[in-house]
Image (cartoon, rainbow, N blue to C red; front, side, top):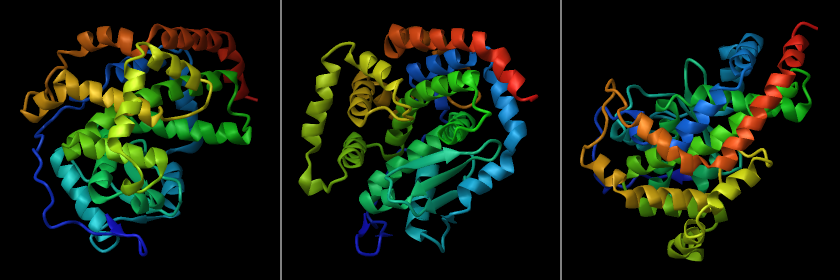
Length: 333
């Protein structure tokens, strides 16, 4: 992608032509497990109350400034090549507007879409330095997918609750912790949706798998093999319900993202199903049209989301019912 000594990004003149996905509706790419997990999350009795209290406690502007205070706004004159890549991805996904994009100086390879009423994207400098331009477009498309799927509010609250929990802040009572656990469960499933959005933005599965390989291993292409990584992912796919078991294990790990090998396996399954090619042919739901496949997706989620994960969320709901009054009482003390 760029000059490793300077960290600059260079956009190729022969950039590949992509199919513009005019008016594509987000549920065209949303994973059924994402939809099911969000539905389960909203059933937690104290969920809306917890979010309302957090909103009144912090407000939108302080959160936005906290994220953006130590970052540089991307524009034609700052990180200009990244800006041109970003504009290209926005065009491919036919995003209704250009969301503020920032680069933050941190070695951690990551990016995030945040906000409440006004979403924005933070791109870590470690990510820019590791990956090439097409891989970066996948990352940008992934984050735009979060915005278009209306994930940013819940993602912002997840980060905020994690920060409070790490500091032992008293607002994070037992019911709020139950909400946090459920948010993390949903957050991991939402990544599966936005991996699809990222693929649609670059329209090359190998680019996405290469990006995941590099983010998982941190190496250069000459040091690693995409094909070996795909074989590694096949071990998960061929083991039946092992993915469900993995999701259950990482419920205990306070992670916001599923493992990259699992994400590769899920994305390959989507490509092999034919849905990816159908979207590129223009066979997708347009914005404003009813999501006719929604009920079908919820039924399909029975296997994708897994009974064990549902049982886990049911236990969280029960805990929230028992502890809700104690949590709410804490705001009045």
